[in-house]
Length: 336
Image 1 (cartoon, helix red, strand yellow):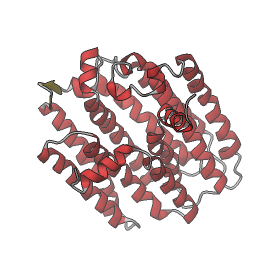
Image 2: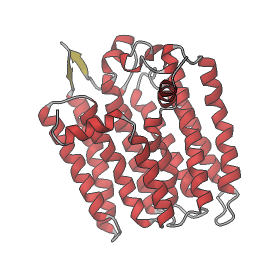
Image 3: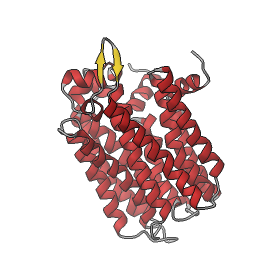
Image 4: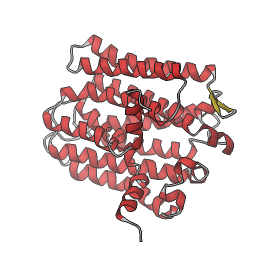
């Protein structure tokens, strides 16, 4: 009989709980970009809708990539890969999350009389589901993978926009900036972080990813980055740092010190990574967490105490059981 600990770890991997924070914060960031106040019901509803979207996005992706994942050693312990969960069951759960998300929106978000949601919030949520489904189905088969990376990125940005529209107010400059930032972030995460992590297996199995498309290769067990990919990385990184710094330079807002510190840490992490030529979970996770934290630092100081706590908890709690988080801390501290 499976132990409780083993069952919990299976649920952890099956639900991709480690990535939940990156999803759950998006509608809260969107809402926080237009107002400082969210009722407990609205905050709970946004987190619930984001969780349903998260389960759809990752379960559907795992089903679409199952044949590829079965050859990826990193995923050998996943319940779907091991056969502990039938693909049909996982697909049923993924599809059920779509009407569930809209039901949660109706029950918890749209029904909050304090600030009626705009009608096009549903359209933005539907766009997020549609974009994610397109990427999951064709993401590693498209002859031009940066295009499907962009489709996926626009899906995540649509989820952030959904959060802003639920507040019944016009989108702000900060909302638009966060949407662009999220788009660029996903291009970096999917086209660089994820694609380089899985490069060897993807190349062997004929998958098409941005890193492979731009010339990254494994030679004698060593990762070789092409000039085209390096230019892609530098361009994305420069834009990801320039956007929040530009926003702070044109406005006197709270949290400027935190944003500047995170931006500097991101640049130094990437520079240290390039200088040392290191690879692995620690450096990549450190870079990723810093990038994810910049929007939090932009929005959190603007919020009232309760929504600020919800945003910080959504961001931080999924990182705690993730071993890569501690690998990142050890790397940042120079520990072996």
